[in-house]
Image 1 (cartoon, one colour):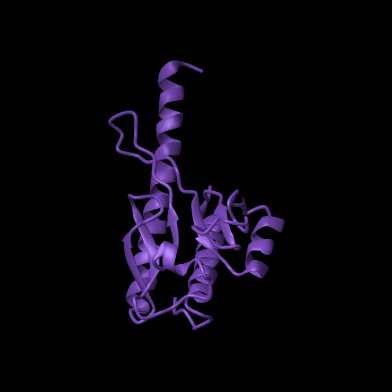
Image 2 (tube, rainbow, N blue to C red):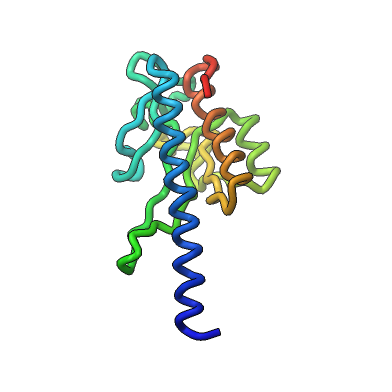
Amino acid sequence: MTTNMMTTNILSYMCKANSLLQQQHEYFHHLAQLNPDLLRVATSGLEKRGPALFTASNVHAPEPVDGHTKGEIGHFHLLDSDDDSGCVPDGSGHVTLSLEDAKEVIAKGWGQRHMMSGRLGAKIVGKGFVLVYAPQDKEELEVMKRIFKAGAAYMASGREIKV
């Protein structure tokens, strides 16, 4: 494979990942628009950049960690591009789920437990805080959307989340 072909393949993958990432971010805004009394989008307090999905200020999550995350339900990870492509090749994210949902995500290979999740003295993240792997295609993106919707419902104390 020539260098030009390899560069083209890498940029194609990165732009595909960027398209999925854009759809992820649009989903956060979609959820917040349909559920303004329950959800909002703001800059992640955990990542310190990029959008995150939060509970509305009047909604109190079941997690005792809610005060530390200020209602942050989840966020996606951003990586800076090393070239002029403008593409961002990451799409993994963190989300707080019920313990039952977190177990399912891990069992089905969609993500893994965060290293600080459930640790004594770890007051920043809840017991159901998981890393969700970046989707590679539209089907996996739909799975990720369902995972973040479940996180939103959990953090909104079981209230129904419209999609």
